[in-house]
Length: 207
Image (cartoon, rainbow, N blue to C red):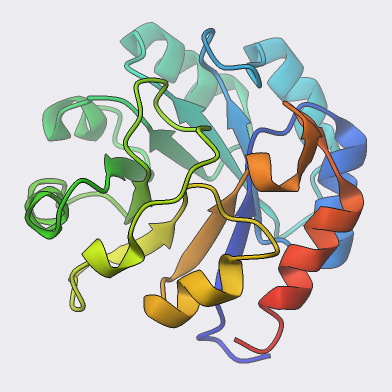
């Protein structure tokens, strides 16, 4: 397996057994959603308990949406995460204030919007391109991958309705640093389907 392989983040974790399965099949990161309006929301205390199932060298990502600064401070202080993911309308200044590695989610509305965001969020470790929706992610719908500009001076994480049946096509249209899968590997919100998880990893096995 080469260093330029496509990484995989499995998001919306709510059960320890799903985290362990993700680790066994080779996922690189697990995402935990700290947003009350999400069907996959967990508390900081739940996050602490769930992250005990994380093995070494697997990254934990905390997803927040237009959070109060106090929540971000609590997450960074209490949880063994490697990265924050801002999935709302947070400004660059807001994201930067915590001096912690972060990903910025961007609605993939147009090539121009994506380019502008990549330029604005200079401190972001990556930008995550998702399908535009009012719920700030988790729509289960794809966007037109051809919208993504071919050359971006920023690592790109591809999200939005990805599953075993389309993820290979998606990364053939635009090769990202990583993919983010959530609803496409579930039997119900927050309940992962272990077979579908494995199929996603297999689909990207030689990419």
